[in-house]
Every structure is written in structure tokens, then in C-alpha cells.
Image (cartoon, rainbow, N blue to C red; front, side, top):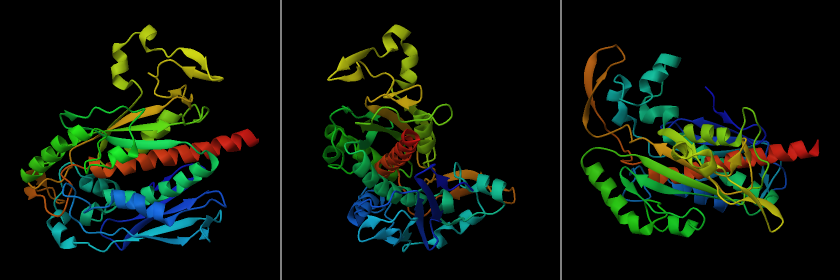
Length: 361
């Protein structure tokens, strides 16, 4: 199973949803980087369950334990290991699912590939695995702050099913996003989104939507053609997040409606720097950052586990039915916002270190 991400700033996540714990090993982090444990915990708190009335009620403190790689608040240049223990497992809620495949989950495909799986909570396929990613990205952000200060990564809920927020990617702030439990950058839409999620949950159903993300002040030159283009790395990172089904950057699919004359981003000199007068490219051209704002969107499907009876089959190939149990999000997007930010941060950290290595040759 592939559990490693990155080339220079490499992370390796481990653990199952209902095992003893989950975590990450970070390799390739430069030495002497100041690391705040409070910043790591803050990001984990944004991702954790039980934080509001519209997310799963599973009660986990998600307290980070740094086991190695730091001394007196600075990185040693050695592997950094971070562990978060699981404390609220309820495997009894998954006894029926041990022999019945949950529709649109990874149960059947894991059995087909490995011949074995951890049925409680989805095992490695659970979004709980992303704890390690968020913790690693919190370290990565502090690396960025040290070697490339000014880079800012912000994500927000753009849509919940048919409800769409009106957000200006150039001006939206973290404070605005965090001011509401649905984590949209449009406070006027927040109440409607929250009520919609509550209604769907009361019906035993679920909804999906789109998260939008902006990267500001990214220097030009990041990304490695041909196969490690920056947008390709971002796409891989985002589509590795559980429940994702789509990725687009810049104009995305809507760009197909424009002509080349309309879509091209003319260059202009501004304050001694090469800039563009428009940004249909979304900050990436030829697979390399051009210094403009990077903006992309990630589509999340409706949560697969719903508290309604569905048709399925057993691991013996028998037709049956299954009603979802356990504690699940009716909409994953509010908790996915910090995960999207985390994966974008990991891509940037890795590519910034890769570019520094190139420039030193």
C-alpha cells in the first residue's frame, strides 16, 4: 500500500481508524526550523470530529504527541514522528459491516486487492488517516514561514450541493472562514448551508460539494515538468483525500467555453516584476508557478455512509441489505477544509525544497 507522499519533504502516514492510533513520520525536513506544537494542535483541532453540531459526534481530543525529530523547539533534520492516539473506538457498530460491503465504500475493493481489510471505521480508507497529513502540513507551514515567508494557503467551502457561496479569493481571510462552523468564506450563506446539512442528516442522507483553495504569494518557478507539474502534483494530492471526485485549476472546465484570445493571460511589467493582467491559468503555466495567485477547486461526493437501508452483497456473494450505523458526517466538507489546505501546503513545501536543490547545483 502506498502511504508515502513527497520527494524531498516526504511524509509517511500510518494507523487505522479504530486501531491504537494514527500518525505520520516526516523525513527530509531541514534542521533548525522552529516548530510550534501549539500550531500543530490548532490544525488538528480544525480537523477533529465532534467540533460542532454538523459533524460526526465521535469524541476524540486528537492530541498530538511528537516522538522524535525536535529538540528545544527546533527540528533536528532527523525523522519527525507524530502520534495521535484513538480513544473513542466503537468496533461493535461495525460487526454487520464486517461481512456486508457498504455501498460506495472501499470495503469490496480492499478485499479484492488485499484479501483482507480492517472493517471497523473503514481502517486505512477512513478520513481519520488524514490526521497524519494535517500534522505534517503544520510542520511544513513552519518550514515555509522560515524559508519563503509570505506564502498563504486558504481553503473554504464553495458549495454545498446546490448552495453556492460568493467568495473573493483575493481578499477572503482565515478569520472569515473560521467565523462559521461550515467554514465558508461567505458568512451570509453560512446559515443556509448549515440548515441544509441538518435537514439532510435528519433524513438519514448526506450531501457533497466543492472546496475552493487559494495560494497567495507563491514564487514563480515551482513545479517540475513533465510528470511532476505543479498542477498535476496538486491534483494528485487533492484526489488522494477520501471522498474526492474532481479537481480543476484556474478556469478549469469553464475555460473550454472561451476562445484562445479570451483565455490567454497577457504579460505586463508591474513594480519591476513580470505579471499577468488576467489569471485564467490559475497561477500555473507549463506546469510551473508563474507568481500569480494559484486557485483550484476540489469536488467531494456525498458521504458514503447514510442511515438508510441500501441494497448490497456479503463477502460470500449473497444479496442482502444494510443500514448504516456508527457516527458519520452528513457532509464532509467543513472538516475537509483544513485537509485541502494541508495537502496544498505539503506540495508547496516539497516543491520549494526541490527548487532550492536545483538552484544549488
